[in-house]
Length: 451
Image (cartoon, rainbow, N blue to C red; front, top):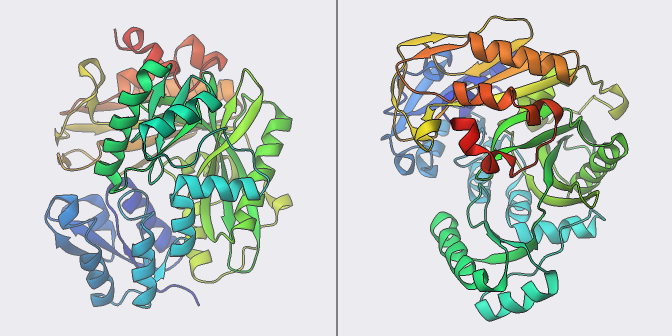
């Protein structure tokens, strides 16, 4: 049954994106807002806005009871969680179902299975997907030392219960293991309430490749190609592009096939992303994790396929059959996304909250901007500093790079500091233009990029 009214349980650019997708389908959108976001773009675009609490996330966007009450009180029949906050919270998905609300995403059992990285590794291995050589969960330093000798240095510590770079440490030798293990476990406990840590082989020169999948309730699963998300700082993505044009076509096909097989094996439903690390030196790829939500970088896939992923999220949640066969998916050109944040790169990426005095977006050919910003908008200090995503489409990668530079240089923002100058230097670097970069390249060249 088609969804009639959706509670958008998020804020910022993704809330605006979901509202627009709802309206394109003739669906009403109710936006849940904190007191800091009552005058924001999403609230104005929605059919209705409901204040769910104070500005801090625990009072609002992480408050499950407030969100459920807002959905039920406004007659919504579905909840779209966006990304971040409760988007990959299995208990929230379960709670929505218990209240008769459709959660726009997979059911809680799938979120739970893929949310624990160790469990997800096991499921991937069962599906025949290569996994990085690693360990089971580790409770003691002594066990870590034994596993490290088996895996070999260098290696990574990782938090089993979550992502976002939390709990990740590079361990280059035995003398670093104890301190890295203890700090990783403490960080994981603070971030996720679960200090479980495991070890993986560290890929020195890796590309972060992910595959977008769509799956309905009727057993249909397809992929919409891949993305290269190797431009990162502290394990957080800065620039993403589609397709992953810098790896061999045969590897691309293997990655796509593996992602579809995993999604089919676990009975996945809705939009999801399977992430891999590609070891350039060994020419091998390994499963990293599966994100059971819409990705921040989904627009680059939309630009090269012409498929609206958020609309399909809503349609699949409403029970529609995925009428796209794999052979129907066509790829056109190349797309690049730059994440623009309110931060000062020269000052260690210090957040820059405040009021936007000028917001003049580029109008060059092939440019899309997903944002909730405008002149006069206030950037509160309580949330992620993402201002928007600049997405540029070109006929091929070289064309997309050049158009991205033109768009970055035509973007004029005043009143707060942004990462626009940093992104300009990054895109204009020889490494980015040639594709000679990996997941650690930005950090290794940060001083030169900021100087």
